[in-house]
Image (tube, rainbow, N blue to C red; front, side, top):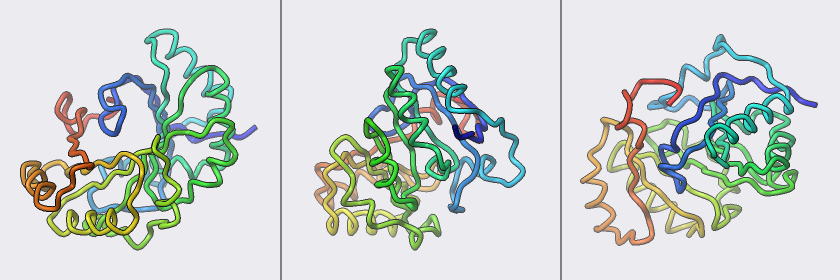
Amino acid sequence: MGTFKLVESFVSINGEGRFAGELALFMRFAGCNLQCDWCDTKWANSADVAYTEKTVSQLADIAKSAAEEYGLHRVTLTGGEPLLQKDIAELINALNDIGIDVEIETNGSVPIVPVAEKSGVRPEFTMDYKLPSSGMESRMCLENLPQLKDSDTLKFVCASREDLERAAEVLEEYKPVCKVYLSPVFGRIEPKDMVEFMKEKKLGRVNLQLQLHKFIWDPNERGV
């Protein structure tokens, strides 16, 4: 049985993606293989970040208690990059066994197929495509894009017009079947300008989404 580097776990609403506004238990794991310019969880990626080692059964117990206390039915595995946890499929299966749906927030640089194939019930992937402003676009695993299902989410975090143009190019090339969201880097681009871009490019099947948690709480607050 594997162990996991758990940085924090908390119950809150999903701040973005197709489950925005829905209660979920968040499990944040340490470590990331990318260093995005505008990352808002860099603290969880540092080599000296404090974490607690948890087994699959311990994490399942946390999820079961949260489900009973709050009536939630979803766990969001996040980071960092949760797919770097080598036994993540084992955890997904354990959560499914107790009736919990699993969403994985992944940065788009790690192949999703191995995890999907090892999971008895395929998790719902919320996957980023890192755009030029992140400085990490060259690290994207392009093979992931055709693997996204209609139950998944593809998210483009945008900080500039250049980012928006690149997102439109990726959508035109890969034509993903999943839900697609454009999300602004908080304080770096005006959402109204993104709406105008969507109109200009006729992106009628794309959604603009603001990060709810940054409007409800302080943008720098953790555990929300």
